[in-house]
Length: 99
Image 1: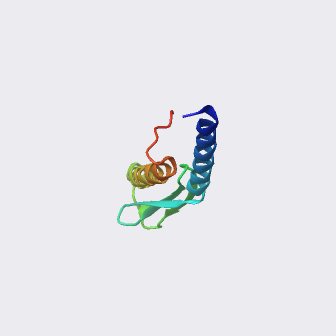
Image 2 (image 1 turned 30 degrees about the horizontal axis):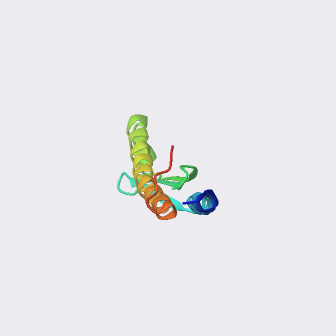
Image 3 (image 1 turned 90 degrees about the vertical axis):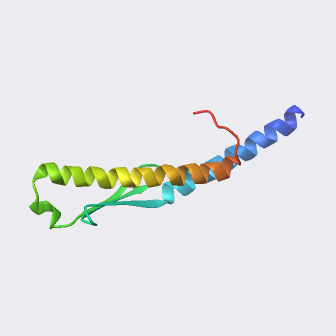
């Protein structure tokens, strides 16, 4: 493979990765905990977009409230990880990208 062809492939990959990152920034992922009493919404880049806490949750002690918020965050992050792997995997078509 010649250098020109390799450079063109690199440019195409860079363009696909940039588009994938843009898509992730615009993707909304929700994590839910406490039977829906807490919802964490984040982007595919782990930015917090919204946090919804039901008034019923706030009736509990602060330790429990923190546990439920953490669980909702962890749920959202796990879903975001799957989404990121899928979108970036599609963009790179299986090519390994250095981290």
